Amino acid sequence: MTNIQRTKPSKPKASMAADAKAGKAFLALVEKDRDLARAWAELIRCGDVTGSRSRKISTRVDPGVLEAAKKRFGVDSDADVINAALAIVAKPDRFKEWLLHHKGQLSDDFELAI
Image (cartoon, rainbow, N blue to C red; front, side, top):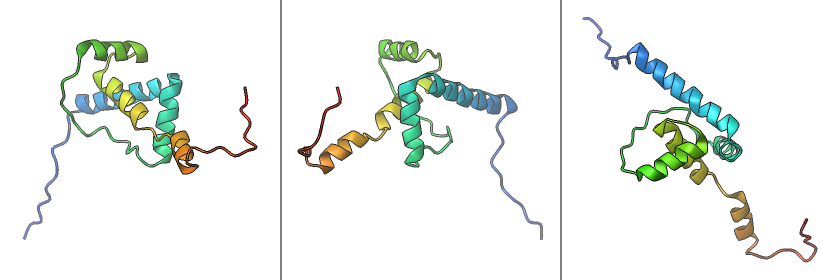
């Protein structure tokens, strides 16, 4: 009896190269944008970054907002803008957690460093 293994069809080399290029472009964006770098690092620390760009989404967005976001981040790729925006929005807010944990109360010896 012959053992037949089923495999997923492989992506064309051009498609794999495009995926790799898109990943590199996004990582270059992370390196040059301080807010995004902080958000990305925090998401990695929390274990939320999978390292995969495999989830495809389809949505309608305001073209003016998308173009403004591309300009703000300095990129041309819709995917990079969406990944960057999602990372910034998804980043945990540790200050908010700390403040809620302390029920909005500061200790008597708290000094504001101005």
